[in-house]
Length: 138
Image (cartoon, rainbow, N blue to C red; front, side):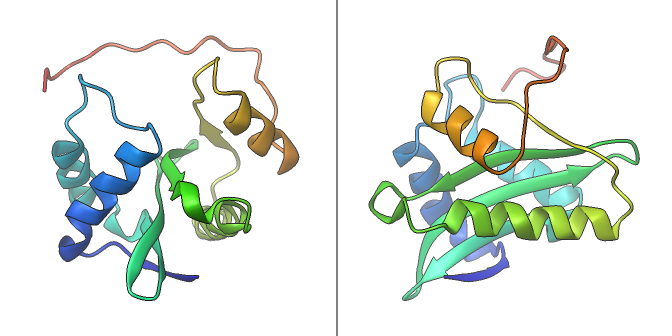
């Protein structure tokens, strides 16, 4: 798998990937999420490509205090090949190079596969409750 920066021509393939991975939600327009990411640290939006096809993606960010990961996904037919590990490793390297001391991410409570994956690569549950507030309705 080749890891590279997201390109505008990847939009349809990335959205299809996110949908296949169950990452999209009715209240988040994936096109707007992509546009927003491209306006802030676009160099932390990566895709994995095989044979010219997008098979994985990850968005990351760093606010000067904590790093965040969103939209880590691997095409269902390509799972079990270590692609998610490789993408997370690359994100960790990029964030550490920026001086990021800690990386946070959110996983839905019922997503046991994702929880197992993150546990296997060293992530643990923080003693914190995630809160959110929509500032812009999509």
